[in-house]
Image (tube, rainbow, N blue to C red):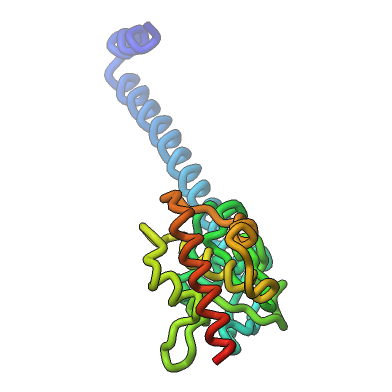
Length: 221
């Protein structure tokens, strides 16, 4: 209604007044359009600055530290809130450490820290400085000979998809350091913190028992 009334009023004005009115309207439209453009540019600038600030903050949060991983001194940039699992996988390339639940429930990310099994998804990287970290990649000997527990898994074909197997192996290796000659029930209890998505626990346990036997034989030899 307002637009129609304005158009009618313009038609009733003298020609010079009509031209002035139209020019005034175009001028107002131009001001409004310019304002929107400036406002949009300002918003984008602020967003860009904020994003840049976040990236800068992330860079500032990085800290160069040295870790003892698989017998080697590895230097890596890590944030204060960064987990050991993330550092091992994404910065050191040790992808044998699997990320399953990422909240300390499945055990797929288990590594040894000073010979004790830990869920690496729940350990902050900077807390392991000065300690010895061993991943599944560090179990085999320098000549490529598998660790006795790894060989036990091969001997018994103790896996299906094998996603969880590195965690089971690392947990078993750590447990056998405290109890090298466990019963089947004792070993089942010792590795009970690890879950298998295929649920083939009997076969896994048989493989771990074979690994324990292989380890005892190798120590006797």
